[in-house]
Image (tube, rainbow, N blue to C red; front, side, top):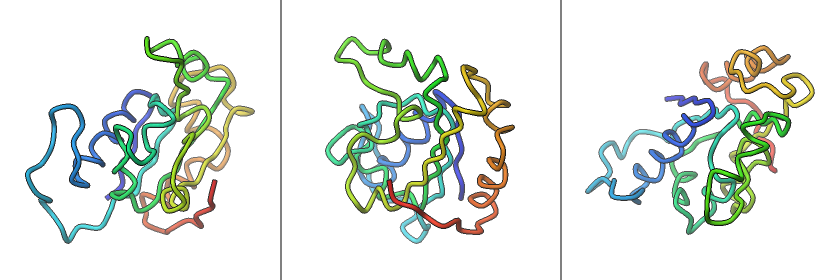
Length: 155
């Protein structure tokens, strides 16, 4: 199973993972693991509009990485939605995962993440087609969808 999302859709993908890992997000939880034999999903997030610290242990999506086999983060700090993401919250000034990647994550989670910066190709656009048009991105995504496991590099 491969899950992909762009921008705010990343919140749905990132939020579903900890629920499947036995945790909860808000009032949502599962009483038990529904498919214990199913392997963790591969995840592709483009311009992820998610707080950069939410994947950290103890945070709201802290169990997400237990349900991820490998994750590709396609980031762009020039994207206005990523650049000004810090204004979405009244509690502090969070950075977007799609701008800087995870701000604090354990070694096991970091080993599953490959980050790709497309700032020099996408520039100040928040358009999924610009992200998908960046050189090599479709091929890299296909490695996740086609289950040709790409080499995983640590942060």
